Amino acid sequence: MAIGLEQETPLSADDFLDGVFKRNPVFVQVLGMCPVLAVSNTAINALAMGLATSFVLLMSNLVVSLIRGVVPKQVRIVTFILVIATFVTIVDYLIQAISLDLHKALGAFISLIVVNCLILGRAEAFASQNGVARSMLDALGMGCGFTLALLCLGGVREVLGAGSLFGARLFGDAYQEWVVMMLPPGGFFALAAWLLLINWFAQRKHQALESTT
Amino acid sequence: MNDESLWSIFTNACLINNFVLAYFLGICPFLGVSAKLNTAVRMGAAVTFVMLVSSMAAFGIQSVLVIVDAPYLKLISFIAVIASTVQLVEMFIKKTSPVLFRSLGIFLPLITTNCAILAVALFQTNKGYGFTQSVVYAFGAGVGFTLALVLMAGLREKLELAETPEIVKGTAITLILAGLLSICFMGFAGLFS
Image (tube, rainbow over all chains, first blue to last red; front, side):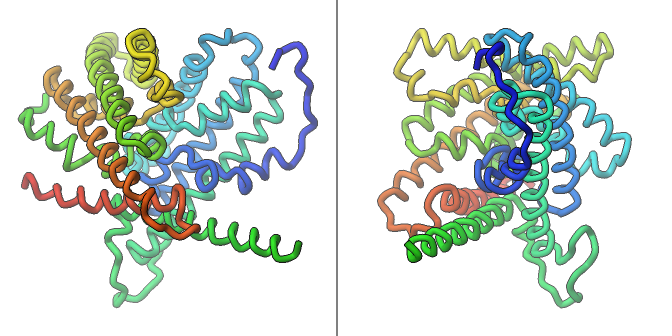
């Protein structure tokens, strides 16, 4: 889009809601899978990861949107990545300051937020072409959608794999834990199960539409 | 300095802690490029090459950063090096093999945001590997990535002929397959005890 001709589209709630539901980064667009699968073994890890990613997304969308007229087209990707890397470094030190245990649990995956395709994707596809306010709204929506999806996965995996949610035990001692859900394969299976559920709903809606017409 | 033997580093990166199936790194290309066996092999080779180059570069940068005492620049400088390596590889492939360039398509620039590559650079620094150890680690990770990609592509080519219900088509069935592969790879955990 040519910078001079750019028209400011009015703000709408759709920018936000699209990110949460219709274009949910994890369940619909299947972006940013690595952290989704790797740190969703407990609900608390999932929440922390979701919030950290949302923060980076928000700040990078803000900066990218501000500098979008200045950056030459050829070096834009590198510029975006450097912007993102700066904020990830900030988040890394922030989490270290807040809770050392959490920092240890998330490990290298905090640094790896840099290479989350979702963030670069939003910078390139949305923030580099839209105004500051819309970009922020988009980042908030995508961040919420991402956090929600992580919580869905983390919740299921923790309940099944450890019999607890946010560290609080849910079942009696007789509960046999599904250890596999806490291990890597569990991540794949939990995400597959959620996708199946969503596919099933989409299919039912489709059939209902067809039968009415 | 870490004194792990080179062979144990290699098997560790390649099989026991396979980057894709145990650490969930590089899932995007793993799901995206694993539909055809042919493309999978080439993608694996490209990733392995970028891993090797960026691992050596990362080792150099880390040594410099230790001297100038600026650990907070680690992430930024690593990612900058990786981005330029990918650019280099892209230009090289475009010049030497336009066919390969077309078949890799969008996934070549996306190697930049392949978490596996940055992860190799970060892990080798965290583990305190020396230069040879780092290179072997990067090579093992690349081979492991290629192995997972090729296995997956083989499975998906067979899957196209199978009768799958409408509801599981697409990403869902691929994830279930990945989960099963991941369980298989857990078997390697007993290799070193």
